Image (cartoon, rainbow, N blue to C red; front, side):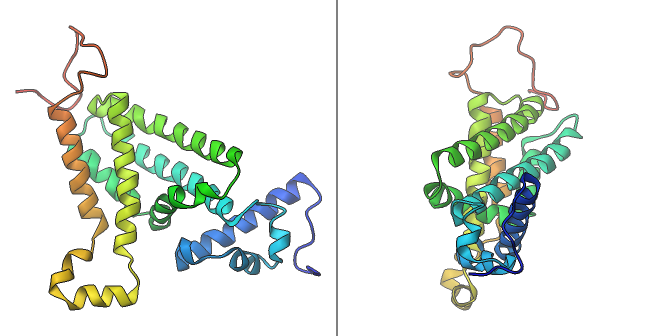
Length: 238
C-alpha cells in the first residue's frame, strides 16, 4: 500500500522521529478514549500510515503503551519527588496526600498502571518487559530515597508503599470510569452508590492508614536493631 504521508524512515534520526509521532498519537487517543479502546489500526490511522508499516517501529500495540507507561513512571516520579523533596519533614498523612494527588492528576497513567500487568506486559518481547521493569525499578529507587529520608521506611516498606499506591490508583481509576451506562445505573440506585468511587480521597485514606501503621509498628524483622537509632525526621515519639 502506498504511504504518501509517511515514507519509510531511513536514518536513526528519522526512525526516532517516527517512533515519537506514533507515541504522540497513542498518547492522544489513550487520553481521549481510554487505553482498552485504542487499537493498533487507530494509532496507525492517526499517524497517517498503514498498520503493517507501524509494526516496523513497534512490535505490538502493547509495546507502544508499555513505552508510555514507563514514560508515565518517570513523569510521576519527578512530580512526586519534587513535592517531597521540598519538605524537611512530613507526617504519614502528608506523604499519603502527595502520593494520591500526584497520581490522580495523571488519569492516563492510572489507566496504564492497571493495564500493564493485565495485558501490556503479556504481548511484548522479554527484552521489552526487562527494559520496562528496569525503568520502573530506577524510579522506585529514587522515590524510596525520599520515603527513607522523611519517614525512615525500610526497603520492604518502601516497596509495599509504592506497590500499594500504584496498584490502588490503577484499580480505583477503573472503578471510577465505568462508562456512561454503568455510571447511570450506579447513580440511579442508592444501593449501588458505593460503586461510584472518588479516587483521590479514597487513595489518600488507604495510604494514610498504611503509612501510619508502618510508623506505629516499624519493621524489626527486615533490618537488625541498632542502639543509635534516632526518631524519624519530623516525628516525635511520646
